Length: 400
Ligand SMILES: [Zn+2]
Image (cartoon, rainbow, N blue to C red; front, side):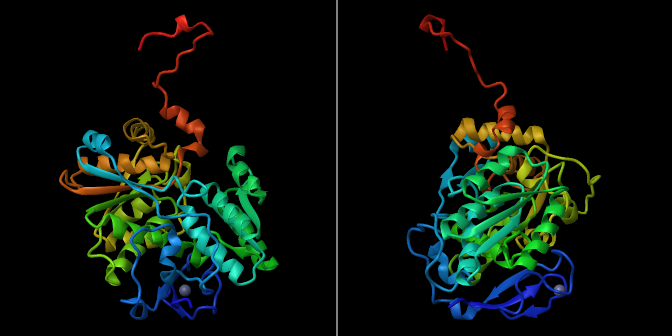
């Protein structure tokens, strides 16, 4: 069935057999000991070929840690890779957009949720939970609903109301924890462990990460000529998982070579960038790009390894550049992405100016989430766009 060979601790290197441990390495507290899943690559090599059209991520089922059918599906993955001629002309480099905004709950988190919720159901779990402040919560709740499982989401108590709405529409219980994201994570994991719920939090559950590799599989297939893949980094999981998938495709002979990864962070949340470049900021701040507003990233080490292994780099961008990029993606290409996704475009511009990316390079930016979940911030990006109040008399409509 599943081709999982072992799980390896990223801190001490200890190996576990599948089933020996559910979450992180027991030698470390918290999420430091996230486990990396290793597959029987020799058994998979040559035994698997990706079909012509990827309908959804389950096209890659042999490379995913699930026990065959049935799987939980809402149609995540198989997302379009769009050319972006007007944006390319504006930036001065050839850019394409891997558009993840059309995933079922509006973000690339669905790739991880599909796998984790499938595992939960295959192992007889009836409740899934996670700590989150946004996309991951909505995604897990949506997939839990699809699978017929109960879902408990732990969020910081000061979470904007709008962000708690989508999980509740999917029928999840939203538990508002007094404190910050770290407090929510701690309470979530303690409660889930005690009550037998399946904790799907990033950095805790090793299999959430694995579903996100399918983004790398698709890029390896569809963007084989890319010199760079630009992704935003919050916890660092998504970039690290995408790199893992692309490197595995190369290893399995499913593609020829890999792209370099450009990790983009906001100036107000720069922990992974600082660690990678050894340029330490003041460590404090905030950003309008809420999805990457993470002070203590769970997967900083994994993300830094991915950047190094790919021959890539990391850049910082400020909120003005992010909001400008959000507007440019909208105006130039008809794409309404969240600020964290727009940060990639600002990051490419920054990397071009710094000589990291060459104007002759082929670049793919990954738009991981829709802009529709945070229209208040998008309103700032839209400032300057024309809005004219007219009354019911057509004669009052101005000339354009
Ligand atoms: Zn360990």
